Length: 355
Figure (cartoon, rainbow, N blue to C red):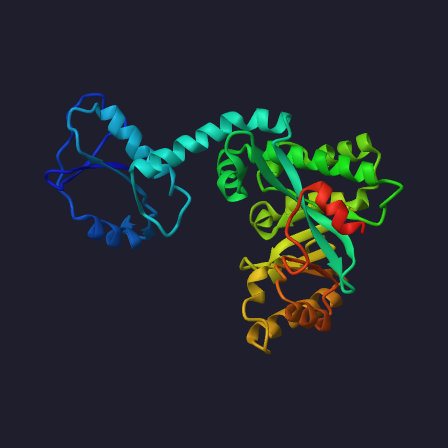
């Protein structure tokens, strides 16, 4: 639903999507706070059942009444698109910051093809170590070095591409880069692996197993060296189909890792059937993990559960020596975090890992 607000009268008015005239349909409503409060628990009844409706409002405040209503609609719709998948936010307002954010998202989307072709987007490798501190592998993380804007944080472009579906092209690019690196290491550093991420959208756009198997064959690398990393949210939809895909990965020789374990609500329910080899424990469990807090109890239980299920445990977000020692004592096998190293370009990683 799209609404506008007249700046002079503070009245709210709906803009019908089919409206083409300049005139608005006057319809005084509650103030914004009252509307938001009403929307939180908005229900309707058909006489038998009561239904809770999730309603979002996109709001554009009309300061110039001569602006064409179609422009008002577009601006209110821009605001609406920012919260359409949000269950907590019900009203979004159009302003210049929102406009700039949307325009930036459109701009970087048009730049993506060049960024991939020219290797502006490239893998940064964050070391993964064993309990002795030896580097045994790395996670490949996308970083964008733009010729004009410089280093772009993944928080700037990854959410945009996840929302518009272009993340699948970034993922494909990262898989190819990782395979090329592993091919270059072959015969020299065969003991190292690289973990690559698979986004939920990858499962919808193409046969992800066939895609990655083809890359492994093209670069003639051992599939066990290219680890497949999924998040818990991947399994929230079509869980049985996803499990079949992960099982196919494992039967093809790949190691499957579940990232951000514990960040969702059905981890244990999924884990009993999930075909995974490694649990990457969500870093939020490390908050206050020093000094025998409740976090330690949770972490210790996860490590024991993983061991009982024959699954290796990897804790990410390790930032201090004490955390490393505590986690080692709990039985964690693999570690990742700033205590060891930040994500770094390939050349720096090789200097760090091969010293």
